[in-house]
Image (cartoon, rainbow, N blue to C red):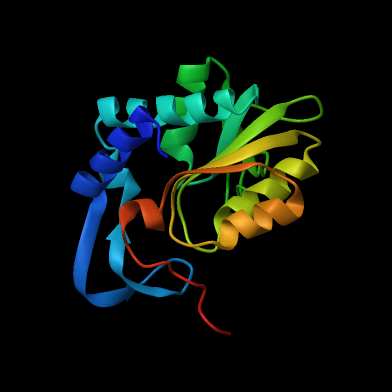
Length: 189
């Protein structure tokens, strides 16, 4: 059962970020789907992004988690990380896909996280969870602890199973079932 905020979020994403295509397209995971969800487009207005971030904070807080930093892999996590940090009045960070090639060669931008930080990981749309798990590994290398992970939309069951295996509470705000679309499985190797 979705909370009122999550129900409103579902309608925002459905109206502003969902496309049913005539032909399947390749997703970042490599899987094919005719159901395309553009979370950045869906949340391009501040009021919609704020609602998503309030829903995320409400869900995680109601589950008993507290955190002092929020972030994930750029670019999917960027707007959500800053927005949730604003709602929760905490720090934000972004994990680069590769270290910066100049200056300090940093892999993490924004708040310098490390031992003692309680992190909430975020991402926009996941199929396999590859991006959020890459961010998880980088965050753990800093010594920070990941208290929970949240995605705006989960297109499959893979991320939930992997978070359970790793012992991290996981909260997709919207699932493929909520959306009424087919589950997307990772492509066969």
